[in-house]
Length: 429
Image (cartoon, rainbow, N blue to C red):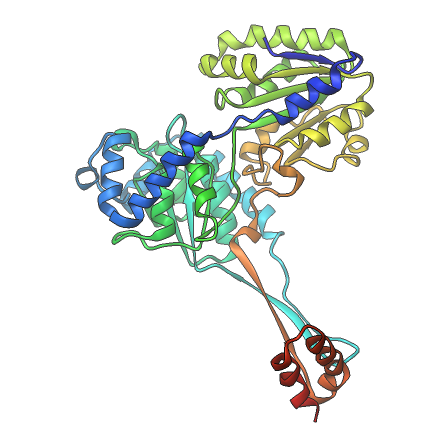
């Protein structure tokens, strides 16, 4: 059974703190294993990739092929139903439109001292995209990663994906065709992240690596940050649903299970001000679980990591929401904007009873690659900016350096840097 907490109980503060601080992520063994994989890929390159793929994905890259060909992607797109193709194309169009609005503007101006100041945005040269293919294959994740890179103007996009038995989900290939990806490698795991970061004889290195994966993939990205840029260190999926008794308990149960079914380490939390509604949702979850093809995963997640929290009123829920800083937050209430105005920490927020988190996973437009593990306190979801960098620039005339140069000289001398002072002072004469 999931954890049950009541804010009226004397031990609530301590129990809630334990819930907030609970970690569901990689342990030291994963860290050590990943470090060894990265070291070997850096030293042995393609030989290491072939060996790891044979061991973990059970196929020979030299037989099944290292890269996925363009005809394979076209055939995959042609082979899916028109309904699925339309859905992927709708998703791609909406994701593109949302992310195009994120493109930052360059700036160039002259201030009151006559100094020209500005910033220019440019895309990275190459991006690597990790698309999961182990427990489940997600064409939606492919679109969510590649489209911001395309909108940013990245010149080269290299995709890696695990291929158990050498096979790739045709929907993933169909999505790749729609997104226009031309470089796809049949490798996954920490070794694929290492190949993108370090490069091998076959695979050229990239500048940024994005995309979700298992604990080994997340740990590889963490260890390689600095060698390459990364979007984030993503952990198990999570959702917090704030709901009153006016909701259909079956709807809320489905929302909670939509995250529980991702992985046994995922977390779903309900916060409500009505005890009878809390019981009704718990009953609805128990009723829906046996109907899911993902029952085993969802049941474990709900029993081990799930929680139902009873509060005096929904205003009391907001401080709890901000401490949890969840990846997904649903506000299933009459006036979600009133609560949303008080939310400071959440990866993405879903407003109102008719906005299930699952719609955001696919076709709404905002990115579904979001910070987990309370990282929404200091980070954001994947965006166009993850594939861009800002270069500042400035230009001074004799009059401008005359206006601000003496202050620079004074500060340089105070810091004990005479060459700094001289480089400015010489221009003041």
